[in-house]
Amino acid sequence: MKRKVVCVLATGLIVASLAGCGTKTEATDQGAESSNVVEDDGEEETEDISEGAGDTNASVGAEDENIVLYDEKGSQDYIGQKDMAFEEKNVSFVAETDITLYDGDGYVAGYVKTGGNITVTEGSLESTWDRFENPFVEGDYLYILREFVPDENEIRLNAETMKQGIEDFIVRWTPVDVDVTPVFLDEKASDMEVYECRMDSVYDDESEYEYWFLEQFLRKDEFKISDYETFYIECEEDTDGWIICRVYYKDPIDFGY
Image (cartoon, rainbow, N blue to C red):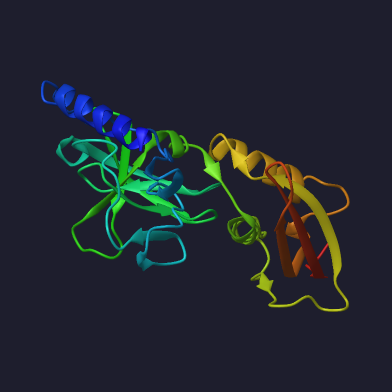
């Protein structure tokens, strides 16, 4: 009973103090969590109302292989991105972790999935925001903090894009003085040899990317992709940002000398 009297008095003091105070909204960092605590005769109940990347309490409104959008928008962590000036930009990257997405008013809208492929198409001239078109709503944009977007010249690869990069490299470096079109098999044949290497998943720019592809696939004494016609390629992600690449090959090209 004494405890209830103390609670009533404390509540009166709080109400009185609030009467002379205003309220303000503060921007919170990505992934910030808050909770409502309700006390009832010594029993405490906590309700999680956190918002952010990969929020398990939010219901999914739309989803594809790259992003998740919530059914209802979350907290307003920022204000006014949609009113900023943006310029054209073109940066594609693979998300290394879940990344929060916002709408144009700064509300949490969803997140990019870990491993999701994203292409940023515009960058703000006034602040550190980038954006791309909402794939589910025509004419709408999703906003992402630039700290999660690689430099415009940086190249980031995963196992799938590395495999495609090797195939493109083989086509590009097939000798032009022979009538040969590279063949890429859907599964390796029993009579194939294999060349294995580890490639970095991040390159500063196109010149560094090309340099290391040349080093691994064209300048080795034991293997040059330009000497063969038929390939099967496997790539898998290793630790610390490396990708293991296996190039199976056969059918040496007849150069006629």
